[in-house]
Image (cartoon, rainbow, N blue to C red; front, side, top):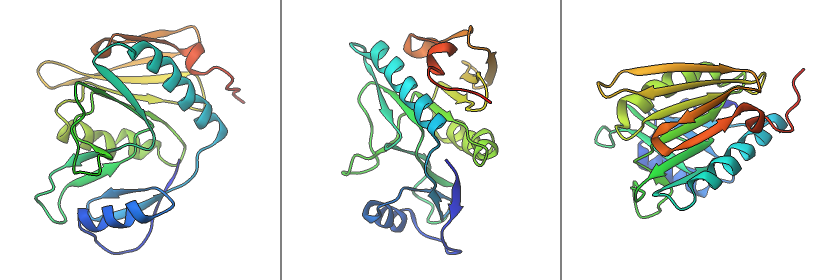
Length: 199
């Protein structure tokens, strides 16, 4: 899914939320600016559904739960009017324990454990760069950040270490399997990419 800046104007977090909650289309918020989100491709949709089904089954009966792309995550301090604040829509987020919410609307999560993004050509640089920097800097509960290509069977899995460092492990090919140890889940790339055809 792509992002496009809506207007050259700076908004407070509360202004953004008022606009976002009344709008028909989703948008993300970064440092006072609002970015509209484009629709997803067929591959993106298939991969997202596969991930939700695979993880949802494995999380059943545990203290963790998955939420799909309509749940927002806040990364940043609301004390700064136009400061370092990001509100985004991950493709999939896993929350362990009771969800902590930004406000009474209960649509913005503050305690993500695992965030998964399905990359698109227009968002890959942002997902690997600014977005990941905000997630790891402002979400102390985050243990895993996973990027899933839609152009080839390729997964980038970042895990937070006890000292705060992040380690990257990459997986190529449908025969590969990887573990999300923090939530006791295992994924095979053949299942992640079921029904997805590459050029």
